[in-house]
Image (cartoon, rainbow, N blue to C red; front, side, top):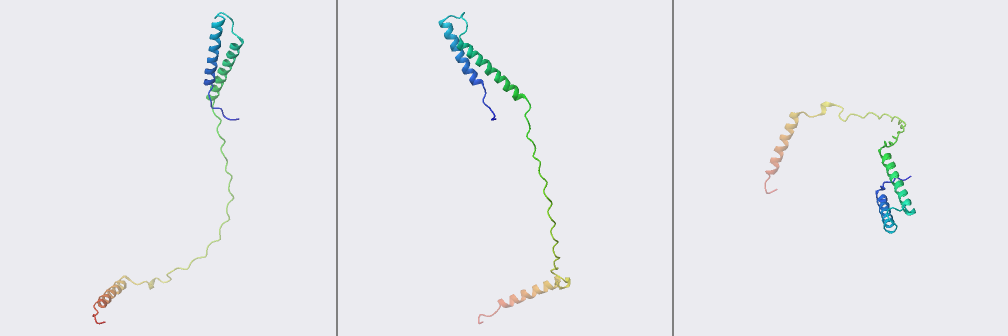
Amino acid sequence: MPLRTASLTHQIQKNGARLHLAMASRAHSQGADQPASAQEKALLEERRSLKEARAQRQARAKLPKQKAVRLVKEAKLPKAPKAPKAAKEPKKAIKGNKPSRADKLTKKAENLEAAKKATKKSAKT
């Protein structure tokens, strides 16, 4: 069943206008003290039913709303454990192969000297 969001106020107003027109025409043609016509009775009954429907809707709106059902998540199956990886060989097997700081500095100084001598070559060569 679709949710109905429109209010009945507009329908009640239309009905009231038609009822007023019917009552005015009866009072104008027959007099105000004459009993209500069938058209007026039908409009009055329709107006009463519209007002009851509006009151029922307003009462229903004040009631607590039904909350949505929480979804229950299904438990996932546990994954199979992976096979352990083979141990890697260390990159530097012996720590002694690493040059010391002093060795690095001497090598750097030698390279600088070689570069200076290389730039001092004569123009003949």
